[in-house]
Image (tube, rainbow, N blue to C red; front, side, top):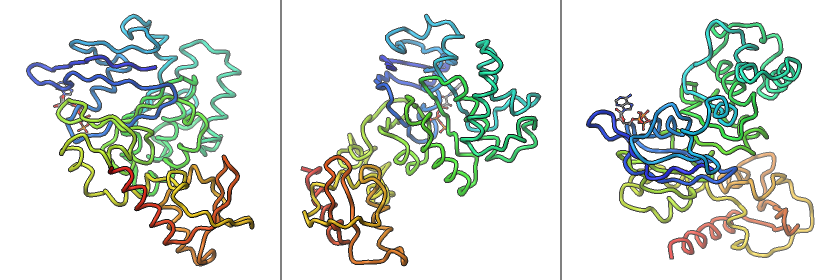
Length: 324
Ligand SMILES: Nc1ncnc2c1ncn2[C@@H]1O[C@H](COP(=O)(O)OP(=O)(O)OP(=O)(O)O)[C@@H](O)[C@H]1O
């Protein structure tokens, strides 16, 4: 869907993006990760036409973005910025409705969409007439996200959308956001320098270093098969935490012994979405504490009875297998 082809961008003598090619599939959530100054924001801003490449091209659905009228790009791409980028003289309602109004949507349809998004993002309707300076940082960022989603664009670009928030607000907005249907079915390109966030939100990670794309792959591929020493070093500090959070029970399923369990277990989350980290946590939960957890693979319908050591053993087998 998005094709970045041999793109260079320099500002004077400074090369910000150095021969980057990247293909992003429809529905893929890709996180641009890398140290400060590695070119993440520049690349993101080139995808929505705010910065023009010095050479190379960016195509969306096979059309060069330079050939697309501005209005069409706006309809296709929602953009969420890090800091409060709401229009200060517009109310919450006017801010969320900016793109639908520009696209001359029917007023009733716009109003309905605004209210629907506010509900989903836990913003009370009484906020419709508030001004941005009457909102907390977390509320303003929810409005920002609602604004980017309002015209239901197939692509969402996000530049450190949660970084200005305190840790707790950040975690809750991020989790709510990940549950939204609107997020799940869109193609998303997000910039962050938070490795944990990248591993939670990205189907794939594009790791940049000094303007070059050093590796683009699934989180586990970067962990187990780093392209070079830079990738290895960049991820090494958080290695264990990341790996446990990035491994899903579905990844481990075939390494878990078949000890049938016919009772409905208390472990309700679908196996495909449950991470190893989460499963480990459930052993610590006093209310549920037990020797095993019961898990069900939603594809085959198979139940397994899993102990802590089963989990750890399966994890080691997966690692050994991936390293081979
Ligand atoms: N408008 C500009 N004029 C001159 N240099 C720029 C401009 N925008 C970016 N740069 C330079 O391009 C390089 C990449 O910057 P960019 O903002 O894309 O990095 P980043 O990875 O997003 O960094 P950060 O994580 O700190 O936001 C940097 O060296 C930066 O100084």
